[in-house]
Image 1 (tube, rainbow, N blue to C red):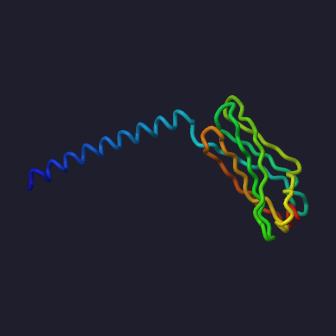
Image 2 (image 1 turned 120 degrees about the vertical axis):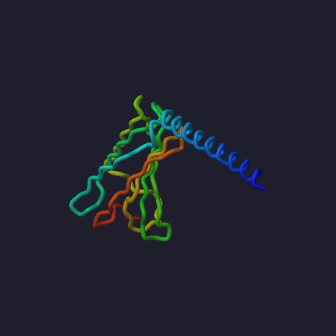
Image 3 (image 1 turned 120 degrees about the horizontal axis):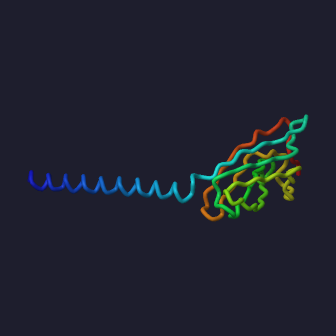
Length: 145
């Protein structure tokens, strides 16, 4: 019984070492291929009343020259409170994006009530990986239906 326990123990150690080596190799390959996950920062321009007048999104670590889907989420107080707008932009050769909208158009739906833009996400269409950044709503709604 002692002999089989020792063999199982050696086998377990060998499997663990192999698994760790594969994880290290996979992590290294993933970082080399993508350069890290996409990251964005959002600069929102708000008027004196707190309503959003414009937004600028800058990002990096996207697929060079690839398509990026920018989504901006509006949360309201009506029967269908969540609305969004989307637009596709192209990353430059270094995998950077810049998206600017002045003003950010309110959704065409009429059942979200009064709402504010709350979240921006930019999704790399080649990898499916995204970066997000929250928006801080002002004292007055950004949109009303």
